[in-house]
Image: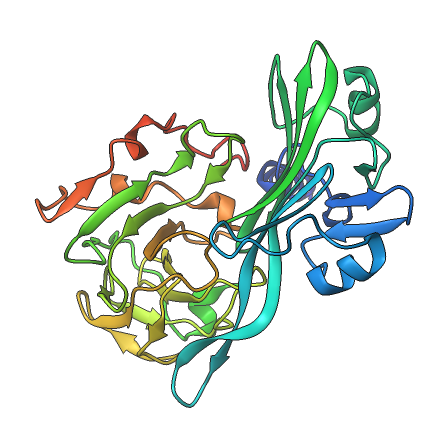
Length: 173
Length: 173
């Protein structure tokens, strides 16, 4: 009886340890991957529609650059991919005209912040207080990750003299 | 989710032998951290650049998995479950010519190369995920399981300048 109890405890411990060991380190939740346009309180993330964004924060600087697949506003750079759909019958993929998904967003001025309030010019100490220790850090870069089943997202803060001077979110494959 | 159970398969102790999923091309991005451009970005597979419509082959025998044709990030995707539980993943294909549940042999054509869901040029993103993996970041370096590179597959000089870091510090094995 005593041996069974010990075995049960051991199995539970091993199961817990395995589970804990399989969890991603330094992982941010999905809701952290948004920027905010401070003036209009508009959220900008991977699910943001470019057309809707222009209605909310105003026209972009030069419209969509079809070569670079990018679109900019002062202090905000978005890289986009065309949106596709799959036709089961023909087993072919087709571009949906004029629909784009954001794959990469970068902010570079104080018109914007992360959804948790970190903006350009903030000190590293504020960053650490809000996000904790990153997955990767160097003198000029702090990076946090989020794992999706088919993607790795990253939120990266670029630093100059311990002050944030650029922030990006990237949806990678 | 136990994919082997789902497909009525039992795990084999014999590790699958993989072959190259394309007959020619250029390795444009290696596994691990991408080359140090603007933002370090963990890359859980290899990219092989090629031409639109170029055949993609099953890297080993297995069963085509029932996954959505498009990832949440809008990349086309095809997954093959192998008898040892490992999963090979093929992304950005312009067509898939196999169907979920279908068994395929090693070297059988499964699709054609494209750029669906990618802002880059035409390429195949190829991954190998270990048995029991649940997120993309658990993928392992395909080059460790592929045979020697044939002369028809070359390496982009920029691709090998990446750090080549593995991703084990994202998800402990």
